[in-house]
Length: 304
Image 1: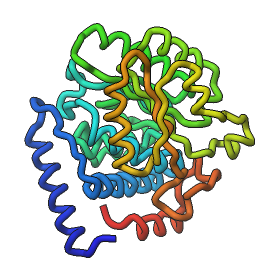
Image 2: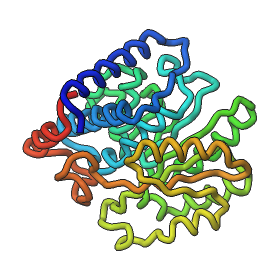
Image 3: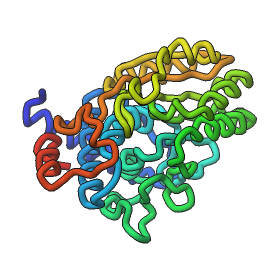
Image 4: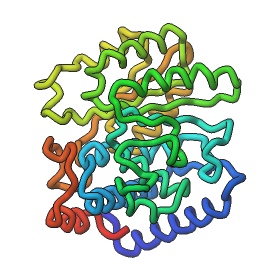
């Protein structure tokens, strides 16, 4: 809990940071943030953007977007090499949102970084908008691959990681999977291939929120023991609290030192994290907030 004056100082620091980011424009690589309080404040703002987007769109995926927020903030603001003003920078790191239904979280992060104007968020799922219900690489700056059909992202990420490894520039490829998604057989084909080819510049993150569209993962189709499975497939495997920035940043950093095998971070999260009525509730997998829920979420998350 911060005192009001501490919040003001924190927001001022973020305002200065965002001004410098805009000033860097097309030419400079993004400078990472590692301060926990700053990252928490960005995550709060991102969650507020997500709720705003979904409420006005009247459709979309609330729970999985909110559970993935801290993972994406840690990755984009604290880890990845990128230039928001130059999305196709040849030496960038790559991110693939395999759980494409969490697109609102990705859009909010990209907008905060300056890949496109934040005003665009108001047109989520609108006709003619570049921000559709699932990511589209043809229209949205910062989106590498169009996703949404579950199970395919890890295969794409493996191929990209193999390709950029030839550049010798130390580029890394990150992909975020849902836990229900790993019930798909293609995930495990990709896992075998990545281990076989020793794709050590590939990092998968598993959003382990324990809920999917039809209920608890263990009721739909058990995916445990996850750690033993990924290790058996030849992956370096870690578990973290997916809402702890120190743990996330430490895990991403650790992945750089493991050679000869891909890495996966199993991030234990809460579906709907950040708004009490959404948390750990399966019914918010694929529905937008009502007026009453929207007002409550605004009270809990505060102003943008």
